[in-house]
Every structure is written in C-alpha cells, then in structure tokens.
Length: 258
Image 1 (cartoon, rainbow, N blue to C red):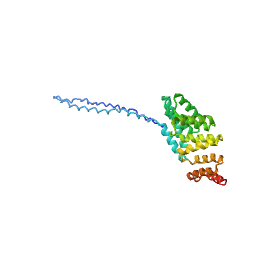
Image 2: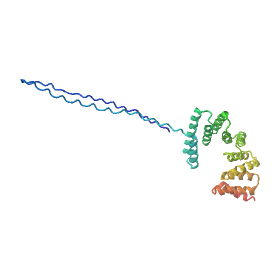
Image 3: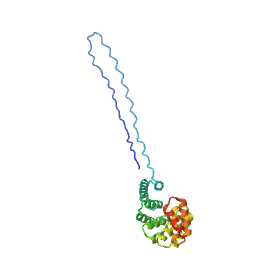
Image 4: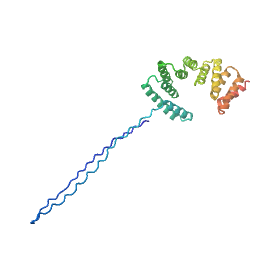
C-alpha cells in the first residue's frame, strides 16, 4: 500500500522589541546642574531562525504486477492460499491501472489473465484476453484463454486456442507442455483416448516432472486396454509422488489384468 507523508513547512516567525525604560529624574535643588545619566545601550535584536522548507515528497514506486503474481504463486505453492489470493487481486488492480494509462500494454493483459485464472475467474479471463487480442495478437492470451475455456466446459474453443498458441510459439514455447496436457485432458473428456495418448506423451516429453500428468496419461492408456504400458505410467507417477493413493490403486488394478 502506498503511503504519502506530508511534511508541512514549519515557518517560525519571531520578533522581539528592545525597549529602554528611562526614569524621569526629579532634579534636586542645587546650584549646579546635575550631569545627565548615561543612557543604557540598546539590546541587540535577536536573530530570526531560518524558515524550514518542506522535504520533497517521496516518489511512489510503481507496483510491479508480474512480481505480485509471482509472489502469489510462491505462496500458493507453500499452501498459503489466502495470502496468495490477496496478491493475485493486487496484481489485477495493478494491471487495471497500467491499462488505464496504456490500453495497448500487452504484458498487463497477460498478467491480469494469469492472476484472474488463479482466482478461478475463468469468464473474466476470457473477457480480458478477448479485449487484449483486439489490440493485437499475443500467444500468451490464446494459451490462457484455452485453459479458461477448458474449465468453462467449452472443449471446442479450448482446443482451438491451445492449438493456435502452439502454432505461433513453436514446440519450445514456455507453456507448450501445459498446452499439450490440457489438450490431453480435453481428448480424454471426449473419450478420444488415442488423441489423449499423443497429447499426454508430448506434454511429458517436455516436462517429465509432473506426477499428476503421468497418472492421467496412465488412465488414458488404461482406457485403451494397454494395461502393461498403463502400469509403467502409474509407476512413474508413484516414483514422483509415492503417497498418491489413486495411482497406487490404479497400478494394482492394471497389474491384476496383465
């Protein structure tokens, strides 16, 4: 939260007056005049303290929306979801300020979409990405829109946007593995298990560290009745997450059918 400190100018006005008080002397009867009493020296006027100029107000630091989003992701990974959501909301507000100043700032559209996605505001993701794509095409917006459409249950638009993302960034884009995973999820939802098999394989070829992905891949292959290969895939999931009960149950199930 920004804070603005006001330091009002403190102007000290001081004035002093030196006054001499002369006593009226009543002359005593004398044949000789009395000599006049020497006058008291005037008191010097005190120096007026200099006035103080106000210190310049600090220049507010621009809130970095991407940094807020990244901090939110770290907190979410640590299980501190409530704090993470607060940072996601701050990131959305920061992006709104950036877009008000520059409606063509594509980074602001992207970070806002990512933050809204983490808040499960999928319809807002679609609306924001659509607005950004009217400015110019940005593959990041296609990708997050594809994920949002998946969660909204619109398989066709989800696939369309994920495929468009991959076509524009190539096979080594930052979110290509995630895009392929979501495509696998869509094909599995549509019971197109052969397509799901390929999509999951491509996702895990690029990021083999996701135990959940190996489990979902195993389910697609099990649906194809390829039990031996499904057992291998479930075993890969358990190697990464030994406490994943659904994977251990699935492994026992397919082993009984080999």
